[in-house]
Length: 308
Image (cartoon, rainbow, N blue to C red):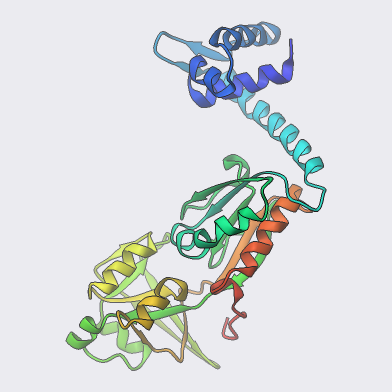
């Protein structure tokens, strides 16, 4: 029995939740997959899969075996990729995770031209604002905005900075009191990005001065584009990244407030960080993508703010 092929069939069957679906993914006959997995279970002396007429589910022993089998297959795939990845030209699959709005606004417009320069790369882009487990999600590079969580087994590389701006629509400003100092925000509806804590402060810095303002408002969202739309509609004051609202400001749809202050939610950073696993050190695929990120116009080309 080809053990490596059997492991791959087993993992594909668990992922696809069925023999037929796994066979289609591997371009094999369903009978070949079932025969190989019967042989694998016989070789191990354990039942890995529960079979019924409707679906295939993994047993307790199978769940444990699945995790190890997947790690083995990923290690083999990575070993093959590392050999192919030693040349000057990047080769192979590259899986990337990007924040939704940042990926759409700052990366997507330039991705096609970059890929045209590297025809031997096969890129998968996942857009999510959730924190990604690189190993579990099989992601090569995850880009995070702000204070990215760091772990002993993850490499963090700074690829740029952005600035957060306090903005409101002309309509809102016409109907509400003027905002001349950070403390004036206490009397305004502040629309907030939700990232775990319900209570939020906006931290303002100007030279050696620091002002912390506990903000409140009628809307919280984990999607920055929802907040932008609400600010444009005149619902309140927003704290939004420059790369998202620069066109709105230039065309008069939004007005920048308290521009002489640097401001962040709580004490978060304004860094743009690329995260990858230590075994990708020296990877030409990863290095090329990081170079691409650092070369993008806009936030990744900005100098680090002095107030941070």
